[in-house]
Image (cartoon, rainbow, N blue to C red):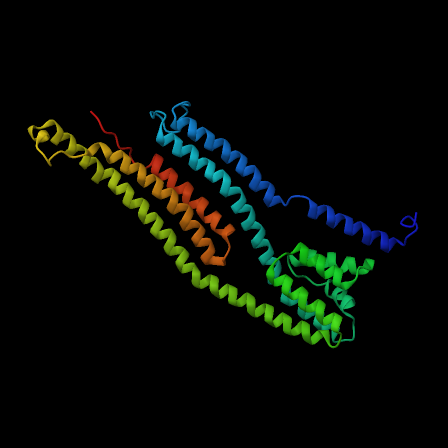
Length: 324
């Protein structure tokens, strides 16, 4: 009964709190994508086991029989389903947040300028919300609307921090909230925070530019590895098989120390395939960590390397056949 007779602004604030709580109780979109990808990957990995045990005869390369190669194909497809959707979704989210943070110093400077004219922090935020700050504009307008509804400035800043959950935003919100609670000249504090934020962004951009060289080296070394395997599979290993078959069919086949174990050459090639998978995932994650310090970015690089490496190994590199 009391809630029904409450002022409109109070009812709006309560409704806002209910909406935020309901959002926090649900799963994030990236978490749903990760779970869905894990389920699809598990199905592919079951197919890989069945193919390895020759229970299922579905193959991706024409003319092949069930065994290790189709099992690896299904394993790689499952791994791609597991890391690709989550990696690309998280990368898109992180890049959107980075674009939002890029205009954060401009917003802080505008709020500081409005505060120098004697405005309180809530009024300064409302006035500054009329500006244009790229993707940050929508979040600022939400915060300004909350302040107009009567939401305390500390609560509005906390909700802004929850919508843009990055270390930079958390640091800025914490400093501004404490400065506002302590009183004094908040405009000077906002100016210093804006300067510090811009310096942090410039340092991050400088780090990414310097690390881009190492990411390029990782990609080049991976593709050089693939080219080396192709040359070995197309030239060197077939010659080993031919030489081994020639020795086996000659009169020297029974001489001790002359026989060549050419039958293990396809097993060596299978080891190369496993090495490509391991290098693709490991090098991709390393590239992402070096570039911006996040594994999610590395999953995107790992997806690209794994897909290209698997396609080249299975459909470009000639198969090694012992026999005849």
